Length: 278
Image 1 (tube, one colour):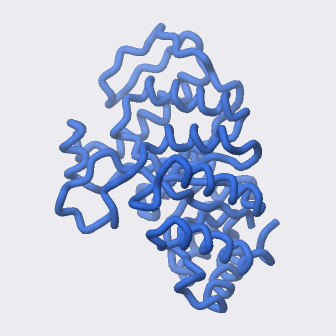
Image 2: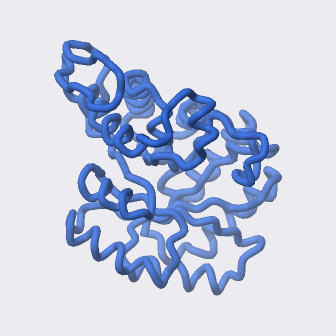
């Protein structure tokens, strides 16, 4: 499997030097990719996420890209319905060009209704809006001028130019474990990005996705593993189970709140899981 690691973007551990250190550590250790989370507006009484302090994901990845040269740069996951698609297309194309082709766009429809209310975006049509935005992104990246006519998003794009284009197909990994998310992954994704699917349930999902999209369709799993708190033998057993079930990449996020502990946890994950890396 390939290994990705979240960088310290959230809460009191986050900061410019923390992001640099986390990104460089990941690259130096041998991780294949670094990842960020996404929330734009969090209700004050929300039980999750554990911190309301989030560095904006794409700016954070740009900062991390400047500190690295090899690791891929992923979003786990970007809440697409909250974005203005033509603007997002230009941001991602620019980041991909500046990083020399390292972006992976992990996408999601979102789940926090109060966040949608704060951003002035309807919550009920977020699935259809996500489909529309995926199509718009691809039109912006491949057509000049654009011919796509949005079905849900209010935007007059026909005849519009959104240069520069990335010069390659930025991979879109559709996130989520629900039936609609899996249908979207099979129909529209360049890969699938699941979250914490139990090992006993993963084989059925990977078999279904492989039957629909073939062996070249990347299957990734986001897990909240922490070698400073979790039993190492259990981590190894789960890594083996995910690998045997056909997961191509593990995207890991420790649970530590302080920067030094976070970095120690990242190093520990690399040490524990090294036998499954390729």
